Image 1 (tube, rainbow, N blue to C red):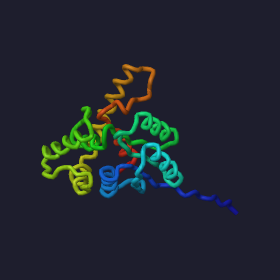
Image 2 (cartoon, rainbow, N blue to C red):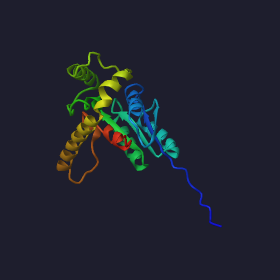
Image 3 (cartoon, helix red, strand yellow):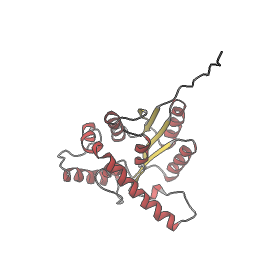
Image 4 (cartoon, rainbow, N blue to C red):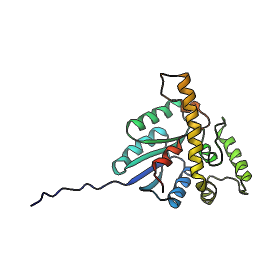
Length: 204
């Protein structure tokens, strides 16, 4: 008799954990609802600092194919941000980080954006950008319908713009610091790595 081989169940779960209760969570839930992925995408909110986001991600990793954390610079100390990024990557956790806020990623849906701005200034620029593109409503973090109509259709543009902007930062850093590949994300305002998460989702 042929020997029976025990088949291991394949994990197709992709877990996104964010401490952004409105913008980030609404965005990825909208993305999941409109675009198909090879993964079953699970979006979770965790009211936590970067360190505890990583701890939650490590627990989720046991039942997920991939786990990513999504957070902003906000007022978190630089050391806490870098430690969280390092620990996450060391343990195979993806990091989608924005400085100063998630709105940097949203602005990239319309234009390549890398101007240094505070979080409240980003909101004002986002309002103006929406109006320039024919949207009459101001941006509200909890407006899931606006995210679906104004941002998700421009996903490919956002990925390209964010990638170009980040690569410019990396190239400048490598030129000035040829032996240092630890990138100073906390000094790069405005920047985002959310496009890396979007690519990892393998959307169809």
